[in-house]
Image (cartoon, rainbow, N blue to C red; front, top):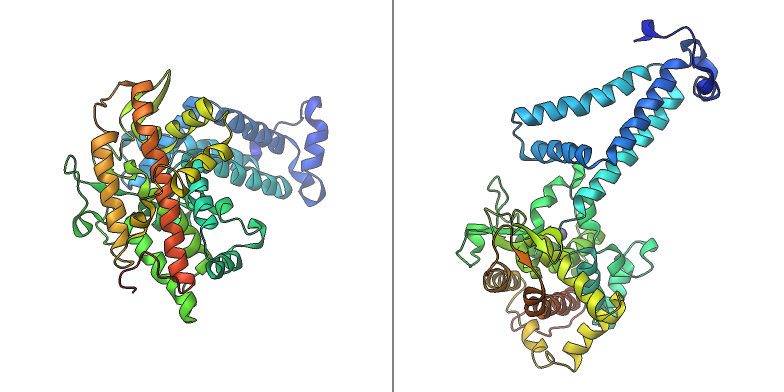
Length: 396
Ligand SMILES: [Zn+2]
């Protein structure tokens, strides 16, 4: 590469070249660094292009599946040459390399946020679930939750409830990605823990119901004062809070072949969407827009009013009912798959357009599931962090 360095650099780039070639790297000349910067800039600009994002996503998805068909290899190649070109051009250019590394990290971060944006209850659904739960905590439990939250959360659990979605593709947390959902056999409309709670490699307990059991048991150590060093109780709290939201999203406990409605493409009113996303986010956003002037606080107030002294006020004690911590998530997942069959999939085919009829009949269900997730998360946290036995017939 170095042998190809032109003898001069265009005048327009001289100052940049000087900047990046100061110090001991001066002898390498300015051109390769500038070329690298241009390639990097091009790369970043391309990142904004839908086709480029698509190619990167394709690569990402295929690498996640662990088998690389031909197309995957070519995408890898395409991706690789971009970076290898920059890297080789940067050879010996120490300072710019650091900038490049930072740019690369930011770029990957951007992609990951972009990719993970469509998974789980939407941000709004998780935030409401956690805000409902935190408002229902008994003083002891409220104290522990605040103690476990990192300082920058300012005592607000909801500010970190989407954290598990943000980190699920990080190398360190890849093992958590199957914990957000349950795939059940198509059209069975039932959840069987032994049959369905596993990841794609068949590893047992790797589903959202298993995750709730696992993180609840970890948090129980807090009260017993036997906290094991293997457990990070802050993370356990955030995972539990997030997964209590996910398990109540009906399309998170849905059919295997369509990936919980993700592959059922349709129109939500006028724009393109898919069935999973309709339940994750579209219904919530349409409700906020049509009835609450996009003010999520007003929407949340309405949900809370419904279970404190409104239409669901007689039901909340039965929502809390739970024989023991290990059996509760099974009940929640079973409710979800039943709702997915009765209300999610019903009358929906690939290419359908869903509008007022679907929205009006499903919106109350989405709101109720958010409320149930919040009330039940509070019940579990009250149980594990204080001596509260509400909802438990025979405590574990
Ligand atoms: Zn999730």
